[in-house]
Amino acid sequence: MSIHIEAKKGDIAETILLPGDPLRAKWIAETYLNNATCFNKVRNMFGYTGAYKGQRISVMGTGMGVPSISIYAHELITEYKVKNLIRVGSAGSYQKDVKIRDIVLAMAASSNSGLNARRFGGADYAPTANFNLFQKAVDTARSKNIPVKAGNVFTSDEFYADDFDSYKKWSKFGVLCVEMESAGLYTVAAKHNVNALSILTISDSLVTGERTTSQERETTFKEMVEIALELG
Ligand SMILES: O=P(O)(O)O[C@H]1O[C@H](CO)[C@@H](O)[C@H]1O
Ligand SMILES: O=c1cc[nH]c(=O)[nH]1
Image 1 (cartoon, rainbow, N blue to C red):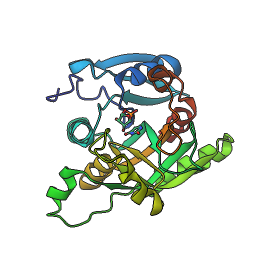
Image 2 (cartoon, rainbow, N blue to C red; image 1 turned 90 degrees about the horizontal axis):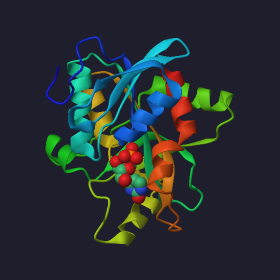
Image 3 (cartoon, helix red, strand yellow; image 1 turned 30 degrees about the horizontal axis):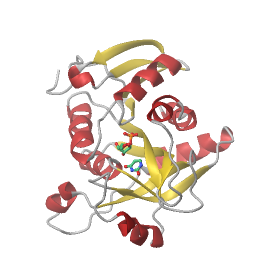
Image 4 (cartoon, rainbow, N blue to C red; image 1 turned 45 degrees about the horizontal axis):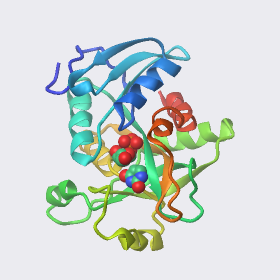
């Protein structure tokens, strides 16, 4: 039992899927896992362990933002010995050709996170995906005929920016989309020498203004989950 997770040692698999939304975690467990048992209800941050194609695997919500995912990633790694942390999140597109429901593999995560700025004394650290997980995700997507895009994403501390157009600078420099956790996840994983990857589904577009509903974000982003489940 850790401060934010009530699971016993051994209750959590070495590989875990991490959606921001705990109800997406519940949906993943109910839809894909055999014999899933719930290991966490603290703060309603639901976590489950079950089997997928005979492999033991876990899924748990992380909440929103770098501080929240950093807490859960830290406890999962240090208290529960989790080795592969795979975020399955939603993101807003920064590019015309990154469309609603496209899947983006986050090779790296630029950020305005206050947490990393403080951690590295104002210097730039480049949070990056684990190469083996990344390569396996690309191969899995190819074998399932699921098209993916890959590149730099932006991890923001804010969902509602004061200056909406500020995203255009990142867009101009090739950043594909915005979300709120990957830079934190990659940094905590690197600190503890374990593996992390973010697989994102585009839920809305800052370019066109289109967006999906919260219900769709909870239960219909299947393809990224089907890629992630193969990475255990
Ligand atoms: O859908 P999730 O995984 O929560 O990811 C995105 O959605 C939330 C904002 O709506 C932020 O957590 C952002 O990163
Ligand atoms: O952080 C996020 C996630 C989805 N869509 C956004 O615009 N921002």
